[in-house]
Length: 234
Image 1: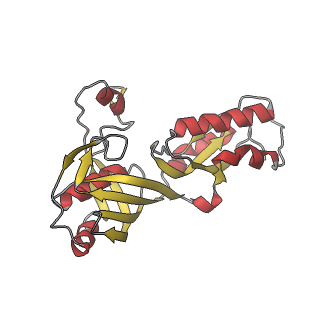
Image 2: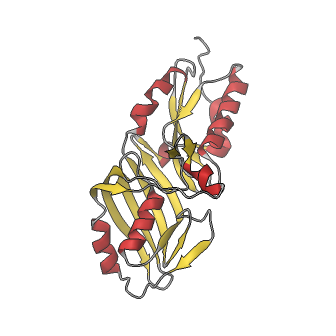
Image 3: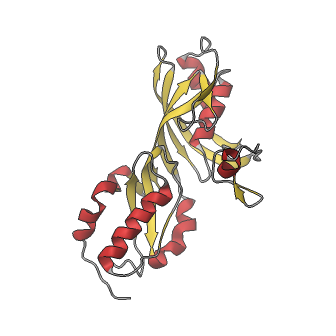
């Protein structure tokens, strides 16, 4: 492997870690092992409370990041119905409760179909979207109101994989294109059910040709690196 000329690989990002934090750790291990500062970037941010496939590019391969970001992604997610949070996940406390007696498996199946195809989605205000040069989540955390415009996204498919009517929890598998926020999808599914919803779990299982099975375990990255045959030539 030649990390200067460029390598593309994926790690399984841990829970409660930012994508930048995961990247910084890998960069430190690479730079420490190779003896020079490695140029590295990631192809698509994962929320801190999400886990799964985070594609990393080094050296000259960082030029491919924009192309890799456009690849189709697959997620598995669990939604809690009947309540909402400000961030549409568990980063924030529940801020409202809603009725759920109208929610059935049949209605969920019907509603999910309306989110397949080319749709418009308003990104979460707790996101890295920029408003006048500032990150939306920074504005929200400083107490400011944020309004984001809807964006065109594409959802290839949504499959209901589980529904627990007693707990009012549902699990889905989503295949989608660039720019799709699963947290926003959870919000919109809740609204379509005349209720509320937020994510309790999110895992990216595939990005392009990289699946979870192809990922390097984050906690054992150094062991993986030690086993590689490394070309240090420029």
